[in-house]
Figure 1 (cartoon, rainbow, N blue to C red):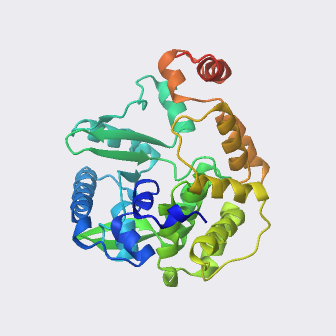
Figure 2: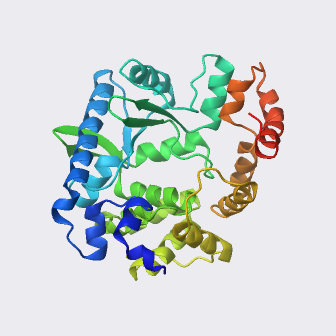
Figure 3: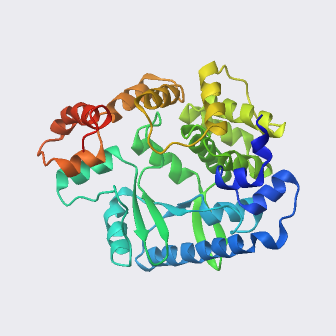
Length: 341
């Protein structure tokens, strides 16, 4: 394990742990030094309440993901985890109303995000993408509106929505009632989220280590693991917890893991972060994602997703979906090899 893991600045800047979390990790007390950060996090909590109140005002049902409520559930303090955006899950039929509400209340689409007017483009966005990002310049806040719980997992979206609806609970916060994922679903969500990102930031592993596992029903948790075919991800999570914390979750089952699946994650944690991957790096990431879930359905979805890109819909105005799937390989070669727009 690299010595930099125990450096406060490295943990804060590279892995996005708050000073309070770092204090817990390093058994230190940063005291007054973290007050400016604490104030910013309290502002995020206030903005979270404002955004969700806006959705309540329009009778929009939503499920907050991560953010202040996860911090509240883990630490009994909504301003411990660092949050640079707010994630909101809504039903697909509420997607367009939510986007319009935010656009009418000081938000704009972030650079690179699109919300097209043409029906064919909108349908392709809904089919191939899982969230849209909107930015409020005055608040310096990004809201991610999700209509898919997770893209690319080995379950049809309709089946996934049924599972989500069966695994919701209510929590009280700031004098309001929020619908959230129950403990079993939320813990699995955190594992899948971290693994899909190859654990690039330790903050995701910290969430799981600090999660109140005493509230998690092991039998219900593993029923969800089996539904998601996520045994490999749970085993990978426990292996990483063992490496960085010396202990695993109180429930775990052995699963054979490809060596590459572990090696890539460790390199991802300890290496740098690149915003513009090379072709080689894209290939290695694709190979890593190939191992996330077993089964032909997941592999087929991975291949199909290669042929859709949001930016192509802005550049060309085809009237048939198939045309975009044919355009995608040309678009990739043009941008990655010939560096064209």
